[in-house]
Image (cartoon, rainbow, N blue to C red; front, top):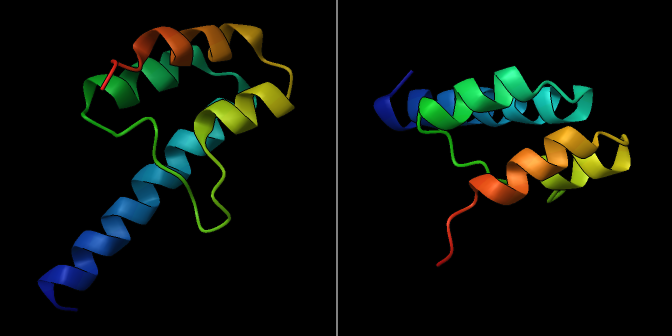
Length: 73
């Protein structure tokens, strides 16, 4: 596996873990992802974001965390 492919695989895994945490409302895991440098605005292949999944699954604490963690552009 070349370096680019390995990097892409790592990114997909990172985003997957982020989205799983959001869909489960796991604010602790979201905090860990944020501190690890994960882009919490990243989207998956269907353009679903952590915010999208947290909101759809009814996790207001995760939504609040994500809203307050995104720095303005």
